[in-house]
Image 1 (cartoon, rainbow, N blue to C red):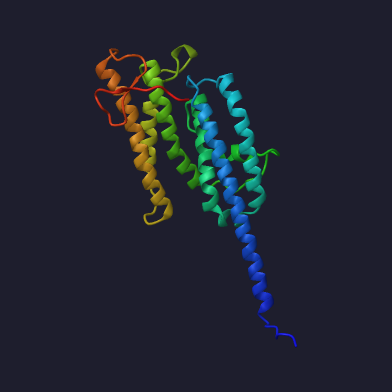
Image 2: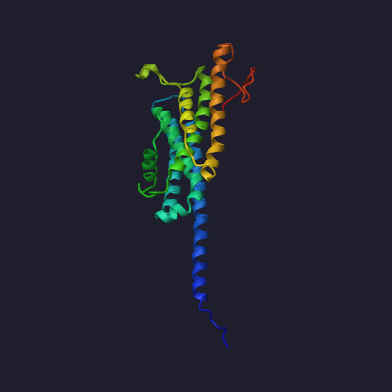
Length: 263
């Protein structure tokens, strides 16, 4: 005797296969997003070795960053393969968002060091689609929310770089007047203040996951701007009497501390 077959068996077997496929794809997307995050972080570490602003990157930095560009491209291709249509890209948006945010942070930081301007969303989108080995794919994957959250994180990298440059140069880095920079030279602190004003003016609906993320990143951004302000004001108030390499501590102590950069 054979067990009776339910007319719903075939339907539920189809549901099971669909769920299995979904969870397997989700795990692959998470892994690719983590790979993208790792490659982008390593790229940022390489860019932090730059010691100039609004100039082409030194060859040593470009060489150090090259393998990380390749790793970023591999992660891009893996994500483009899994999220080949807009429905899938939307379904796995939260899983891929951390990697995309880190990619935006690395792309905008490198662009800022070269041009002292902020990359637009369209520029980052174009760079993302061209990141893969085939120079295409990933359309519709990068969202405005990923771009905005990545720009929030950019202020942290600008802070780390600026504080180090204050210790090395004794002032907030700006374009070199000898390089034909326009009048009214801008320094990093002024750029960060403008970014803070623009980001704080964002109108995000309350009670949404994006509003929660932006709230957390806003607090960190404010701290980053204040650290650069304290580092700059400390040198202005105390003059040049502090020894070379002096940097104010994170608490803004008047005594300060000596710190050796690890990059």
